[in-house]
Image (cartoon, rainbow, N blue to C red; front, side):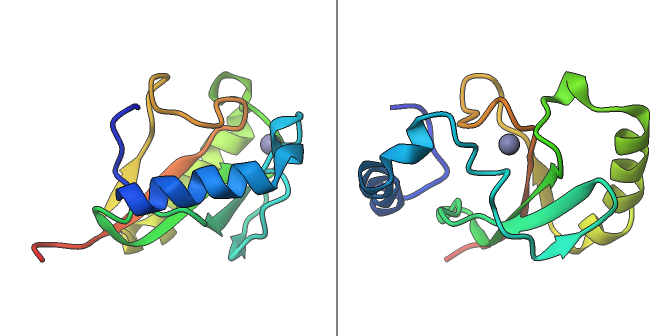
Length: 120
Ligand SMILES: [Zn+2]
């Protein structure tokens, strides 16, 4: 298994969810259909249903509204991302991007927005 910021229990709930929702393995993009907690012109912020519960008290994600990889984003989309990053995203502690080793949905660009847990 790849290195995870999730507890064993959270990883198991993902396996259970995937087993119960085979349609998401058949080409439907889970991020495209994900409900937004906040929407911008080109971007939306959503909750992560399976948070990085080892490190996060809050785990949201920001992603383009359209289904696009990082290299497919337009200048307008990047420009708005920079604006959001330097305003709204300052509410979080960390902006975190998985590498190709850990990305679960590489076809739809997204950045993880984390409020950290601190020492337990
Ligand atoms: Zn998508």
